[in-house]
Image (cartoon, rainbow, N blue to C red; front, side, top):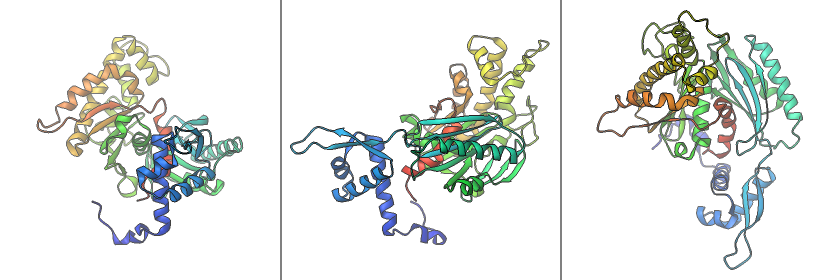
Length: 400
């Protein structure tokens, strides 16, 4: 059970507006999970009064979040009208900032992207901010059917204070206190949520991952990209810590003499041993006197491994070994139900899964259940889905 902190009690009192909001979210979740569903079925399953359900449904229709899709089977009286989440109406703006690019997209309430644009990143944060504003402005103009519920979510590769909306520090560019969320809010009059990319991915897994992952209440996502990020889910909620600084396990020590330098400057961090840049550097080392291909990407390396190139395979398996060491530490510390791996490495899952499983199983006490170690199901751009989920989850999640 959760303790009630008196400092925040005024925000938790069950005022009539709070109760209405909770009931609205419950009805919306029923429509999301069990569509097509009728008003009568919702009233019966929730034990809400039919008049209350009808009022909530009417409001959701007016907001452009749900729609009627015809009649169901009659059980003796008038045929019930069936409901589902409305597709196509933009509800969420996602801004996904990575060390390589920025992706901006709008999506409907089901999480389907209806428009997106990608630009290369610049170390000049004021320039990239102006580019983001320009693209968002054009994107909004292209979609006159944007709902009044339209909000923005921003995912960044660094520490972000979810509570205050501040991008505290992005180590790749050494940006401190970047005010991108405040700027978007003022420029477009939107509610804006910002979070670390790994936290955002964890939230996306919780709400939009495959059915198996959505059933877990306690799991950890490991985002393998330019660095290593972790998102921790306890009791169905993302744990962020003070000022969003929780989950910085990319800097725990897992070895020495890594193939690349960590963003913090050290050569013994998990990031320096198991990130995409570590995998590529390891591959170059294995080529020995061979001239490394210019601009090798992790996608190319995985492609070579999948067709059997020896050095690419060895580089990936060594990365999997270090990835497994870090995951073992997480299992020992948190005893989660599952570890969900996200990033390009999932495209080499058949090559790395056995290595990961062998290492992580060593860290589990014999009398405890083994956590599942599974690949993400979020698709090609999990961090963009994370940015969108910062908005979409708010529509469905408990207000507490």
